[in-house]
Image (tube, rainbow, N blue to C red; front, top):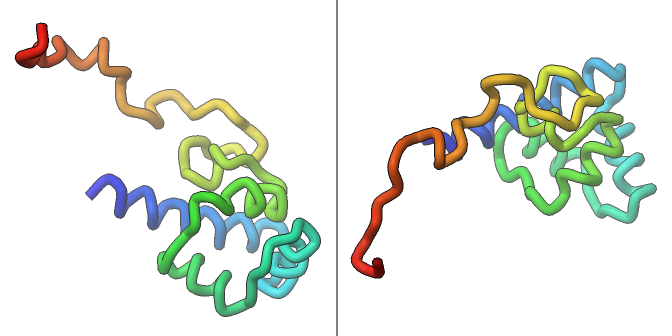
Length: 105
């Protein structure tokens, strides 16, 4: 469930950032092309509608959209911030409680 939610957050962040910059999908595709990424309007439309964000392309999308990957992942509300906002991530394992010891100890 969490992965599906993050997938949609990323799709929505990409579309929202494009609109914030006043860019068309064609503009973003052209920017990606300048970075050596092959994409089409159809590809970007699919991404913005939650149909397959390739995580390997997030850095290039971030450059094209003048923001950070952290922003595209929905971990910060500030486009140029690399650090996640407070509460954006689950607590580290040490803060969640004792780890399962398992049979190997």
